[in-house]
Image (tube, rainbow, N blue to C red):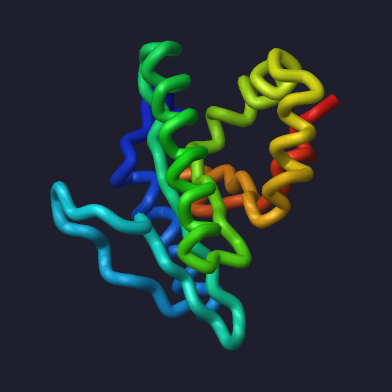
Length: 138
């Protein structure tokens, strides 16, 4: 598994996976353009998806995670019934520790925002796995 995975590589892999599942997707955003990273539609289902990559620096990863969380929460105000945070699969190793660090607060976030999901994108296997927020709490 590659140590570093860019936002673009994560997003492109996820877009390819979702297209193969029959989702219609928003166009990729232009550099500097605001708004949701990926808007996926299939039938009556609409998912707002925010994407980050995996950086070398742990403080940069934390900053990205906090920012993507608040972007995902903001989509609820825009009417999102489902709002996903898409991360490279490499985050899977640190999510239990991150959830454990916040303890009950992590669970309360998941209970307060049941719309938020965490998706792990495997750019090598060209796949992804959907999880809910509280799945990471132990």
